[in-house]
Length: 195
Image (cartoon, rainbow, N blue to C red):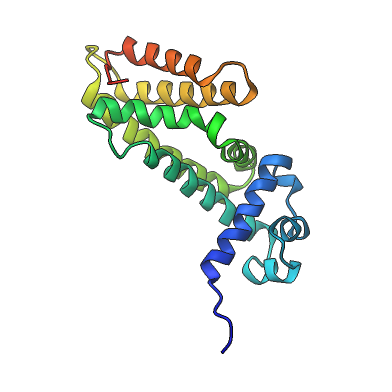
């Protein structure tokens, strides 16, 4: 009986290898041959699933978005309130610097490419727009500061969380210090969550 191949798992395995290379060497360091070597498969197999480097990078960008969403969702199952959900979502982003540096570094590589590649830019913006809307809705539901612009605050909070993740990644501050900064900002807009 012929061996059954899980094509979706094989594609994901190859895309994960590409993400690791993106994180280590940037997108310019990704080639079909290097991805094949990283994944432990032949170049022909990589090309079977991804005929061109651009196809591989797009699949990796999709995988990156899914992995970050999975990381954030994993922090939320027992959130007790909208304020707690907001805090935990932002903390999950901050913790990428300590718990998922490959995702954070690959995200930076894709951001640089998004400037020149309209397909990657659209994927990057679509993911960012979705997260922004969710954060803005949570700010609206939880912030007590009068006259607050929830959309603007969502940008501030996401920018802060991303910057803190970078700080954690390079050792500028540890996760505990980053959490204190995030809680300080949440407190400024009247969000009080269970710690």
